Length: 311
Image (cartoon, rainbow, N blue to C red; front, side, top):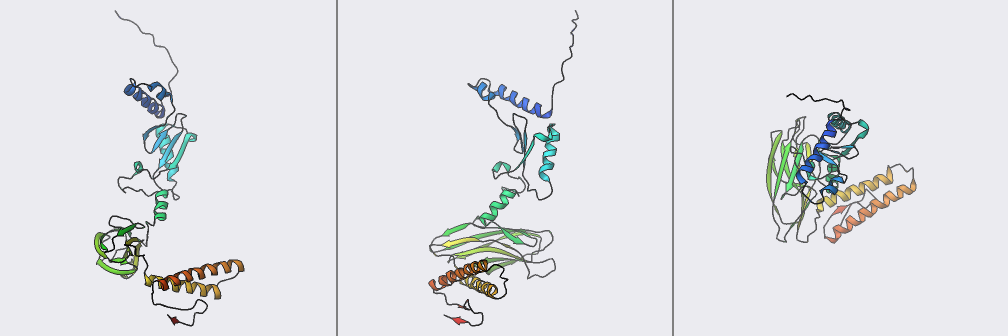
C-alpha cells in the first residue's frame, strides 16, 4: 500500500555559513557532554565560537578577525575582514578587526616563535633586541640569549658561544666581525647572500658583545652593512665600562656643548639653558666615573675647544 505524504511549504531557513558553524558547534557540545552535570547552564551562558585562532563569532553575531601582520598602508586588516565576511556571509557592520597579541597560539610556523607584528616589534625595541642594516637581516645569540639580554659569569670568567645568521637579497656580506666593547676580536669571510656560523669568545672582564656585517651593493667591502645590538656579559661584580667608549662619548658631549654655545640658534633662551645644563651634567658624571676607575684620559675643557690637558 502506498502512503502519500503531503509536503507543506515553510519559511526558508537562514542557513548561512556563520549560522551553520555556530549551530553545529552547539550541537557538538550537546552530543559530547549531554551527561555532564550542569551542562544546561553552561550551554545557556554566552560564549564566543572560535573555529580558528584567527576569527571568532560572538553570540550577538559580531565577528572578530585577528590579523597577524602589521598594517603599514597595505590595508591588510580590512582585506582580511572582507575575506572572512564573504566566506561567512556576515554583514560588514558586524565585522571587527584586532591585531594578534604575543600569545604563542599566534606563532607563525614559517617565521618562528615571533611573527612580525607591531606589538612584537615594539616589544623587541623596548628589550634591545634590534639591529641596524642597509639590507642584510642579521640574527645573533650569545649562549642562546638575544640582543638586549644579560649573562652572568663567575669571577673567573668563562667562554661563551656566539651564534649568528645572515640573510640578504642584494647586499652580499663580505665579512662578519665579532665585536667586544666596540673592538673587532674575531672575523670570518662570507661570500654568499645566506650564511651562518659561530664564534667561541673567552670573557675575563665584563663586556658587551655584538655582530657587525661588512659589505655593500657598490662592492666596497669595508662598508658596514649591518650591526646588531649588544648582549651584556657580566663577570662577577665588575661593571661593564669600556674606557675607549667612554672617551668617545665624552668627546661627543664636548662637541655638542661647543655647538650649543657657538652655532645653535637661540630662539628660546630658557630652553637653550636647559639643554646645555643637561649636556654639562652628563659630561660631569661620565668624567667623574673615569676618575673613579683611575682611567688616564685626555679631553678638552667643556668651556673651551682649543686647550687640551692630560690628568
